[in-house]
Image 1 (cartoon, rainbow, N blue to C red):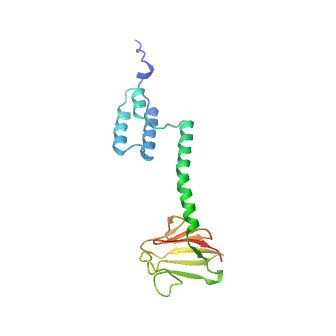
Image 2 (cartoon, helix red, strand yellow):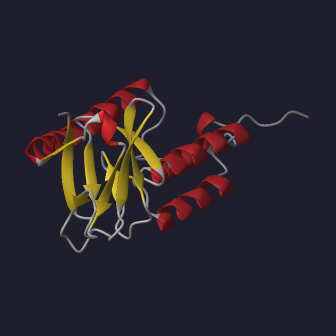
Image 3 (spheres, rainbow, N blue to C red):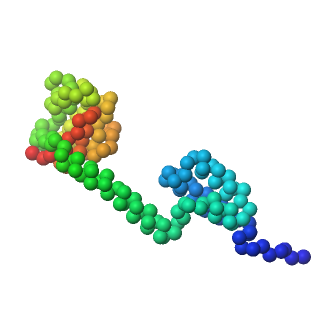
Length: 181
């Protein structure tokens, strides 16, 4: 007794093919190409697929792991990020400069409180907002539990982060570009 031959499109998909299709769907959902509901619906199709053509239909319109698709996605990502990088560079050059103190200064307190080394008159700045300390031959910026956060180069910090001239710092809503004396 022999089994009847099935056409290639009707062959039952293997577990590896299903897993590859699920990987494409996960990547599509993770990159925002598929909504959650669409992802769940297509995942159901992949899990119940009885032919390879059903798998192909479930991942239709999503990039696969081919080299051409990866190249195109990277190129589009770089082109779309160019405007953002240009805007950040333009804004950074226009930021007011904040000159780092001389190395012997030790500490510089930053906040709204009278007596702060750098007193910033803005409601988004906490009374005890941040502290700049000279440690191991360089400057380290510490957030002191401020409400609106301390940011270095666009990232909110917790604890201490080394800083140097050219870095962009933000205390609440006030932004500065660090400069050397």
